[in-house]
Image (tube, rainbow, N blue to C red):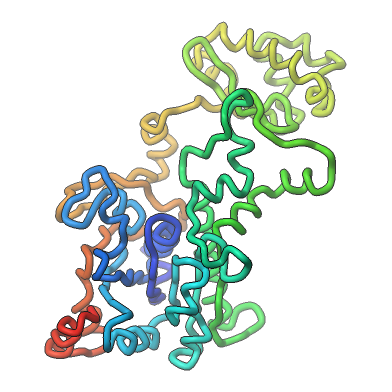
Length: 401
């Protein structure tokens, strides 16, 4: 196996709950050394206590988003802690802060505060609303941003209330965005791009990420009079048929995202006479006559089971059964791609978790459990900074670690 691609990259992570830890897990899976800095006065990352099955400051929730992370406790308000942090910065590549947008500067976690300590340091901030603007000092959470960014207005049944996505989609998307941003910063330091060899700030927010994900919907609203909102059966705003259909025993999602798929669908459903119907020949025609077409497809879909329709359509028309989470985690493709893995944990036993979504030839991602609170404090202070046992004990007495 080849060396892990991010081996040798060291990140000091002030990360908590979801978005930041998810970003660090992706980088840690591929070899980055993630040193999670936790405040011992508050019990570290509050995700450690999220139910169910929280045990002694650890939980499956915490482990699912902190795989491979080391834990170093550091109270930046205590005497001596700031010096320790700065010494860690000198031997690190990046500082990652998953805090409110106004806090990196206040806590000295931005490039302006650290450039004299290490001019090559990359300071990545992932916050709810960014480091500028009127909401920079407000805490931001996934579900709030789904509401603010218009996601909820487009999700759910038209006759029901606005609905959030079932997963923390903004947290995870922003985590991915921040991981990309941090890597771009490191690439720039190492001479990529314009050859700049100094570090700098990377500013990513949940709201910016969510607004960017509006993408073509935003383009429609900004440039046309098309209204976007909730549609029955999770249908696409303009492409027909792209939606969920009720079958004899479940639900099937069909995606005719190209014109070639519509005649295939109609023919294999026994509705070939609809292919040349002038109401349904093109995307524009089918959009104009959505109700007439969908009502006929729905009636036919109810005559067979989901498995029967899959046997007829799979490989000819893009389609998928609407799975439960349990079913999704048992899917043959998911298992074939190592997306369900096992990690041995000293307290929680054998944990099953989702795997790394980034695949590289001859690279086996790391699969270590996240460390207990402060579990790596003394070893890291000894190995990275050369502190003696007496010096570490003194820092403990001061409340710094």
